[in-house]
Image 1 (cartoon, one colour):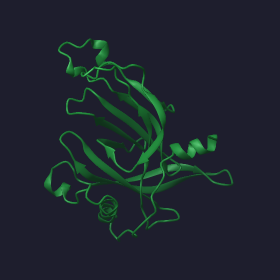
Image 2 (cartoon, rainbow, N blue to C red; image 1 turned 90 degrees about the vertical axis):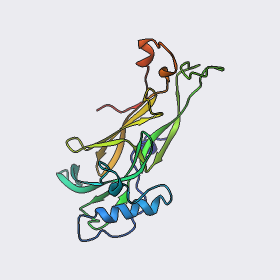
Image 3 (tube, rainbow, N blue to C red; image 1 turned 120 degrees about the horizontal axis):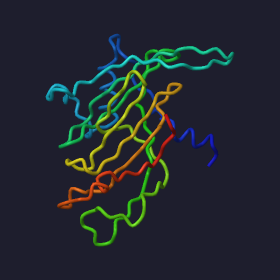
Amino acid sequence: MSAASIRLLLAATFLPAVPAFAADDGLATAKAMVTAAHPGQCESDLAERFDGLEDQTFDVSWPETRYDGTVEDVKGRLYQITCGLGAYNVAVAYVFAREDGFPEEGEIVSFATPAFSLDYEPGDDTYTKLVRDPAVTGFTAGTILVNPEFDADTNTISTFEKWRGLGDAYSTGRWTLEKGSFVLKHYLIDPIYEANLEDPPEAMSDTQFTLYDAGP
């Protein structure tokens, strides 16, 4: 695979734009886009039924270098739409719209993530012993993030996805807005369910595997 192909894979891709945004801040249209894209998976009334799950709008900007070498700040808007609620995880989708070129259109963001394999020791019903370290088998992409937070100071979305309610096993990811795309920067997993043991060693609680790291 060429370097250019890898860069395209790791950059967040966008689904085709659907309806034009309304005259307001576009939040209602963004919600309609997400609900239509995930029928049966996304609930449109979560924000009304549960406190703290309100959809949000963020004004964002980032530098881009033009053909003549000048650097210009480009502006856009990011919509955070609560999509689903589980026992210990909240599913969220994002819609992104640039001001330049397509001021009235938005697109659902797709986030690159590593695909990986896990091999626990045969007969290990505690899921605390791995035969080998997790292996990255490629990359995939999806439009739903779990327990995400957006940092407006760094234009970064970070996640903490619990694999079960105790949170002893989990995955985390970080994507940063660059040149109008959310690019995967870091992805880490903790696949060890140490809470299955009565007295797990401290080192087991700290076992983590970085599956992808592009630096700051």
